[in-house]
Length: 419
Ligand SMILES: Cc1cc2nc3c(=O)[nH]c(=O)nc-3n(C[C@H](O)[C@H](O)[C@H](O)COP(=O)(O)OP(=O)(O)OC[C@H]3O[C@@H](n4cnc5c(N)ncnc54)[C@H](O)[C@@H]3O)c2cc1C
Image (cartoon, rainbow, N blue to C red; front, side, top):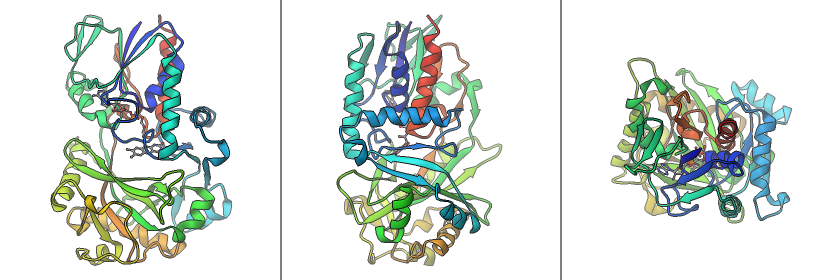
């Protein structure tokens, strides 16, 4: 079969692992100019691999299958295995109990952190491996905007070249492409109700050093009095805060490197919002809030505020002892209270104050909050269309490198059985 694949990210890596040596002719269309230049995602920044049944996706992917994915990526690094940072979140019963007793739900997970710098080598080694197969063809600088179907063939961007199957692996940045397709196939949408709103929190390493050492990433959830659940996400010991650029707004994110370290740790605090009918546009809701924050920042910048000012609902005019790792061109000092909905704000404050009881110093007034950080959940999509399949984050079933890669492998194995 002749297959078209949109996007070269984690899901496509999984797909190619299953199919690279098969009889299928595979064409990968990637909008970026090369493997490194795509929009930021976990296989180009940070590269934290985890094995957990409590997060990362809703696919059936056993811990053994996840471990196999992790081993694959680690085997592609140029540095020795012993140099890859490792953590075990809540493997220690004492820590588990301490957090549990204060109302938190600790999430069990193992982590391997490759780092933004070493990730380049990993990606380059993976790419070199796939290039050796004559049935795999890469087409960079090929953004797919238009998908059409005629009889049993798929056509891309109005070209005459027909494909037997289309695999969409366009990640979160591919939401426009997927959204354009949905009106023609509305029955493929299984769920569309969620968005996570929050901020990036940054504090000096020494406050969370013991947690960073023990777990690398401490993953906890708290059901707050508002009814909203707040969770930590993407902890970056000695890391850096960055902007995440979308087509028409920016949000914040974080990462860390293997070599170059900062004095601060950052992590996201995310408040999960699940809406009910007639609401059907979580991406619209999240985008509006991100844009509102950008308007307040006077353009595509983050709003930065100290936690003390946030609590007092005062615009920050000065910073205290914690020096931001985001470059000063990319933020303005402001008041996040003007962008964050009231209930979400209350949930965030309750989380920070409760965490401070177990980790003293988390609620210091000098600690920093950057906004907005938003996690869009793609529509959860069905793969029942005979010609078009979705894998990875754009399918709504995955939210991590491990799960997206595993999803690609699962579809690859199914396609192996087809002639
Ligand atoms: C800043 C950041 C850091 C992250 N860190 C981690 C982490 O440390 N660990 C972790 O497990 N997860 C992390 N994640 C999440 C993780 O990156 C994703 O879950 C995973 O990469 C999803 O894989 P994917 O193949 O679905 O999408 P991606 O890896 O995002 O790949 C999608 C590809 O499709 C291309 N594309 C999109 N639209 C088109 C189009 N129309 N035409 C052609 N090409 C297109 C994109 O350029 C991209 O290369 C992070 C995400 C972000 C944004």
